[in-house]
Length: 408
Image 1 (cartoon, rainbow, N blue to C red):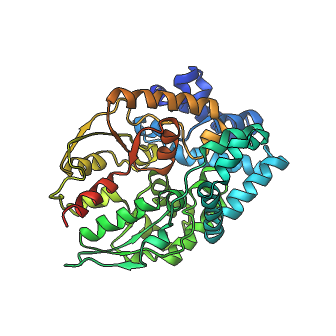
Image 2 (cartoon, rainbow, N blue to C red):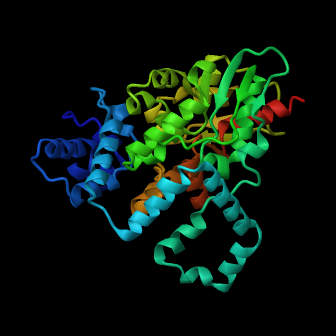
């Protein structure tokens, strides 16, 4: 932790040039607290809140320091100590972490309510008459950033078991996620189509628990463990050749169930079988499409999800999949693996720093002159779309699925 190679990769250190805002500085604070040289106090809690958890430092670290585990353990200690307790904060954590993201049916019910609000005209009416201005400041800021709900959710688009027309080469489980399920369900549909087109029998349970990433990231380890157990019960890993995730943030957490459940042998097998969809497609030698997704050549660029690139080390595979699709001209994006500022709930808790990172990312996208931005994480998708509503943003598998459909 002494060499400092992580410093230039850290967005918060880059913004302030303060050692305490660097991975090295934060690890020093963690060690001092662990050795009772410093108190576990609000200042430390604020520092952990300021960290994006983007894990770029992990990619840069020559010693292989597991910053993700240190970061999540620190947040868990902060929550256990009750340093940040407050009525308002407690209510929102209870509503989101304990209720919505522990009860998938309730989450879908709320999603349908939000969809009705968005498509029925109520949203436009409230904005037109100015009632939104009466909301508290934080709600006024968040209201226009709410994701647009999908017309139909994943369970309405995907059969529980879907099989290829020809030879069945693989038996896989498909994870639909939470935000992905509600706001980008069509990406899940596209993912299943691509898997089926490559000889997979795809099992997609209609009701799936949250992977627990949001809980682990916010210091709620026991809830993360409970969701891990639910997924292991729902999708026993010995029943599948691979367990597929198409969301960078979820996939990074899904690979570490053995750390959460060290005494559960299923967790080790689960970790060994979790695959990002691009990773899996390259392993099974994805079938190149014979048709292009569009009638003309289209310039695209690719933004790396932090947890896909730094957490899962899946960097080359998405680009390899994109390059297989006819009719696309892929141009490199400057600082493609630099955080966009989404980082889970970071855009909500640290709006100023998040906004600076988003502005930096948007500038690079504009410079690329790409017509379509490709990315593989719903948080990145939503964050960049809010800043650039004119930009078309797609998941790479959606273009691959479109190309396959054009073969018919």
